[in-house]
Length: 90
Ligand SMILES: [Zn+2]
Image (tube, rainbow, N blue to C red; front, side, top):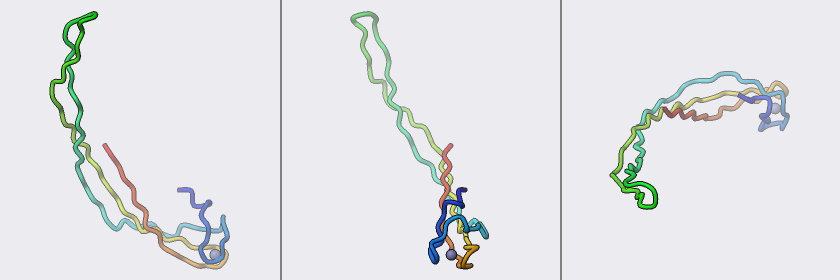
């Protein structure tokens, strides 16, 4: 996590922001269906044809994790929380 690039919303300082805590607040699991066209190559040479042979489906598992990330500014001690969503497909 590139926290050093964050800017404090109170004093505007960069590089002074520290990650205080990271809390998992929710997880979601979904399945997304992806369609693949299936084709069959018929014949050869100049007569070769591509024949559509239906569709296959692939299930893609999607896991979504939602975090509440709390930052604190080392300069003015302002702290705030950001919602971060992490999505993993596989
Ligand atoms: Zn600050």
